[in-house]
Image (tube, rainbow, N blue to C red; front, side, top):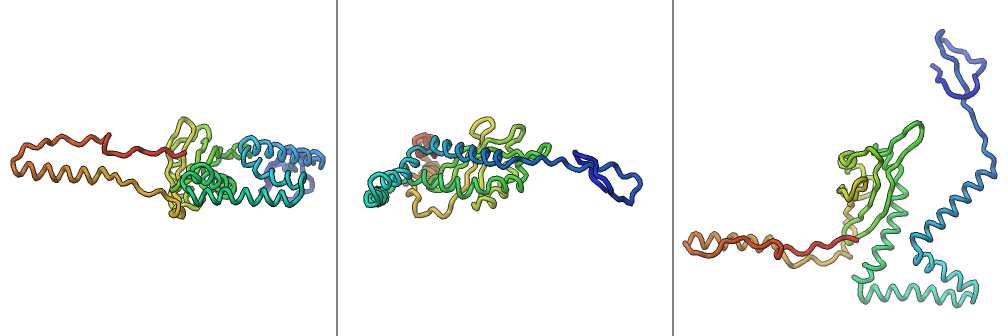
Amino acid sequence: MFKKLPGDEAQRLVSTTPDTAVVFRPAIVRTPALVTLVIYAWRLLAGLMRLLWRHPIASAVAALPGVIWTVYGWPYGLGVVALLLAVPTGWALIHRPSFLHLIGWRLLAFWRLVWVYRRHWQPVMTISGLARQVSGREYLPHLVAVSCTSWADLVTVKILTGQAVTDWADRVEHLAHGFGAASCRVTITRSGRLLLTFPAATRWPFRCPPSRSRPWRRWGRWRSAAARTALRGGSRSTAPMSWSRALPGRARAR
């Protein structure tokens, strides 16, 4: 009926069962407010240092207008902001592929990391059963990095020690639904690292044009031509096509 908890023995408890064990009141340690403020300040400082270390260029670009505003006045700061907005816009209008490759996909990956994956990571891992609780402490898989391409989000994950790939492969529907994607594909990059691929159907305006090389059609034409030659009794060579020349080069996602 009662649960045994650590701490002092509870007094004046009434039970209707004769074999009730001794109940202990849980121990409560009151943390001073100064210690709490120091911990939160340290976490804030560590987060800022981590942000500067991972994104130095983006941090410098974001801080530059404020510094110029403070030193030279608001007209110069406003001019720097207008310049920072006009240069990328003109670049995107003139040559979109290079802009997306160098800036666009990285900004989108940072936004998706902060707003989608990091914000929903803990509830999705817990509800899907990929998180573990040991002695009251919750252990989550580590979200390593997020990169974006013209067709999908590529999420690199460091799994927990002792987990298997099948634990993630059996929960692809949970992952896809939790992060707002149509489907999810799980692949192994190296020991302890997985790559989750979430197709993004809403990026169709930014997709690259499809390759004109269609080796399967050439293979079908070769088979039909070889069959017609064999029926006519000809001696045309039936050596299969070299797939190393037929298949187009596979682009690596960065």
